[in-house]
Length: 258
Length: 160
Image 1: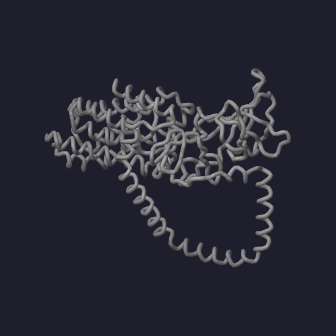
Image 2: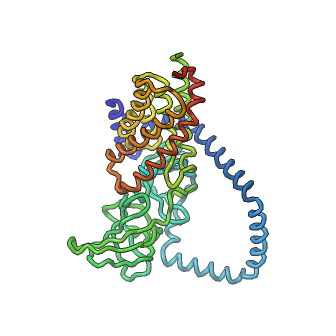
Image 3: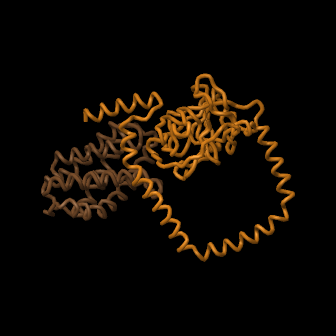
């Protein structure tokens, strides 16, 4: 047990410096071949079983998609017009600026719901550094905490220790608050105002600037949607329960913004 | 009992279970609860050795789990030491070694380790975590029943 405490101390001090403990690295490197083989075998098996069980349905789906593709070609001009509009909206919301940064696409190789952490198959070999932002198509995933040569670990937005400035879309002036993890499924967005400035269904995005909180998280990355709000007049504050857009358990690939 | 074959079997079991924990545990989660291959390995190995060996198996299981997760090493070491102690104690209490006892030990050990872990880490969503622990315990029990017999054969330990 004493040895466990000693190793834990080494691990914590390395993590606080944004590094992976050498012992962690050794264990993960030893387990990596089995993890890779088992993961690939599982994916292949799952794909095979899914194909075998749902073969007829896939054939019908394929036919239906082919017909839809033919129909969609008729709407090509309309799609181009809509794409233009989407691009304009993106510029308005500064999303273009957000994703203009160099990015690294990487696989998620491990997820711990208890620790609210994921392990990503990209490390210093791909220029990853502690503090970089991890996103996926749905929105903000978390932030890189420790980096090893071939992998890194990110703290998820659902972690209680992860705090970040957030705002709601569609308001002028924008209501700013502080968001933090509540449990593995929800987040809490706190406001210094006893009347909640957001309502159910509002989209919550990163506010993008902060002196005190982690820097480098760009503005406009989607975090989630407001489920409900709660007034706390006794402390002159209010808060909103947020359902994150990203489900970490289903993540396969993520993008790390440099 | 051939001590060397037990040691080599333990090494291989922890290696494979560590890899499976890292590689497929998240993909085979049931109702959001993942199986814990390292608890399964700890229980099975601790049943094939004496109490000192069980403690070592517990430490190894906790060390592997903490290293793979990347956080809270000591909490994993403490909870897995309990897991190893449960597995070893059952055999010290003259329970017969078989896959059913392995499943039962794994179920109880996962529940107790999960509860102690919740206490040590102050999880915010207690009910959700308890539900996940219960599902994990059942999942691990089934895995332990499947894993026990091949590991016992490999180690060369005679069933009592």
